[in-house]
Image (tube, rainbow, N blue to C red; front, side, top):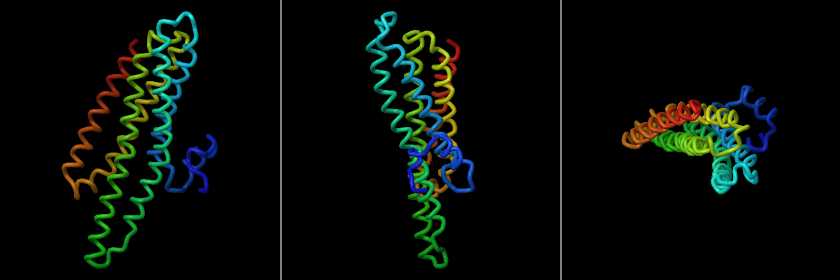
Amino acid sequence: MDKSLNELTINEFSGALGSGEPTPGGGAAAALESALGAALIMMVANHTIGKPKYAEFEELNKDVLAEAETIRGRLLEGVDKDAEAFGKVSAAYGMPRETDDEKSARTAAIATASVEAAEAPLAVMEDSAAALRLAGCMLGRSNANLKSDIYVAALSLQAGLKSASYNVDANLPAIERADADLAASMRERKAELINEADRLASEILEK
């Protein structure tokens, strides 16, 4: 594919996702799902800023808009980062393993590539949680006509975060064999983010 995933149209991306190619896959889809959630937060802020009825929340919505835009940008970068990381893991697994030296080199390469492949979805999880916090502060402080869009944003961000967690899981075994402490730290942070996302989404949808 000549273009980066972020340069594809919706039709092209979904077609590539459904093809027999190794990428894009679930990790890229997770990042995109959360990017859409962040974009919805931006939309709500944009439809609130400048409206006299919500003047007291003007600065809040401007701050939310700026932060959500930054998060959306990182999440979109995460779409490509996931594909790049998967390519490195795949290349590492394809290394020769005939001799002991080759086996050692392959094992080390797999561990190194797996760290990057786990860090990419973990970053998606971090950004998704940050965007969920923004969504939570928007309820009651933004255009009431777009309340349902905050709900959709929350669900998209929760889904993207939890989906990304599976890509973290997929790489933990290889990391654990090389660095058990790092794997444990990633596993712990992943669990914290899932719990936070579930709590935040629940709080948002109950309002």
